[in-house]
Image 1 (cartoon, rainbow, N blue to C red):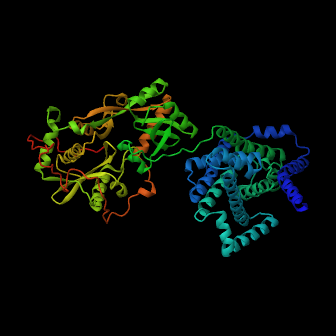
Image 2 (cartoon, helix red, strand yellow):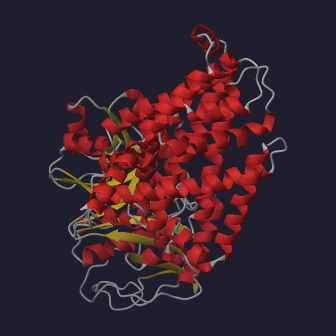
Image 3 (cartoon, one colour):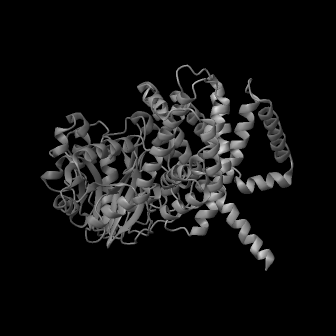
Length: 634
């Protein structure tokens, strides 16, 4: 019974330690500053130059940006499933509030628990303890190294730094201790965490230096001095380390005017502690909720094959959306599945800390957006074919028949492989196309990845025995959607027309309801007023128009004119500079061929030949050439 009472008493003493340290720090600081007028301190704050304030704000922003990386790194290494954006935001809010409120591990655990609703309090507490202890470990290493190179360091600090470095050397060399450290800082996280801690503390010291009085001549010594003051603040656990932080700075900073020095420290607390804490509290009130990704619905549209290249399927109410995140935007791509519930989608995005955006939305989504007062801009038109009723006859497909005839005269053969793809040859074609077009497009457009091609329907165009072009299609329950179109330079006229016509014929043979030839920028819509006519790719539209498709309008819908402009620029940048593919779909070596099975079609051979009695959609047509230039793909 006595042992239990002692434990309870010890726990209470431990919890009261920050309060006691705060009181002691304030009392000692008050004794130290006897005779200093408060008005002089406030005058010193006002006397900070605008350049000093701007420098401190910029350095604080860079420091806090590094702070958010602590959580992102640990979440990534520990494979918690929390996205980097949510992790950075949560860590930044947690640390901004905890460093000001005190009781760092406890407060940050509660903030993370509030911000990550899928986590239990125990999980948030364990993670917060890991963040706190790992930062203390890294701080001690940084402080020891900084003091060791500080020429005017006090002897006690030098001896402490030497002892700390010896301890680190023993820990690094002793396997049992090294194992303990790697339990605290997971393997693979040490160097990124050390870099983040270095950037964080360096820019925090720069922010302090920007606010010091002009007569202060501290130079590079500001870094070890700041680290020692930070260590004293962390040891007390008091709100903002109040008292201990100031006492260390007053003892180590060479400045005769204590009122001016206290004024600089007060300005630093406003910039580095109070302002981020207020922003953190505001962010906590609307804390981001992680988005729950759903598996692909078997009845989903073919275009939803983009989930394999980084897109996600989200449910808002009774509606499913194909979404991507980009720079704080939650962008739904294409029409939704189910009744359009735009209010639910908007609420879902805002709870995740994202601005809701609809891109390439259909008429139903655009109508719902208009009813809510959103800005609706026609940005594209999608070329849609109904394979069951399509053929090459009629005046609207006169140009197509000419191109098909040229391709047949050039001896172009179309193959639909069933058991293996010539990945090496396809990679060469893709590389040739990429060199000519500078880079592949992405975001809402597919990119070359062998791991994904065997999930699609692929059509290959050969001249003699050389692969010169190919096209791939996402497949859905009752529709196909054009994904990749690649060709080498200088292909015979009509090659690409023959590729797509063969795909349409395959769709008709398999009783597919709908085939999308993808979208082109809207020629007669609102986009024409915003961009030069060259950007509308008339050649691409003419190419698709030769198939006489049905053109379905697609819209960009955002609430507000400024957010709409921001979304347009962000999406354009994401398409032209999409960044790396997810690791699981990055192109690997294409020296070997991947074997795979495709759904059985009515075609039994590799080359396209209609079955006996089946009318071919590709008859022999004669006529003069229309345009021999290869046209850009979608």
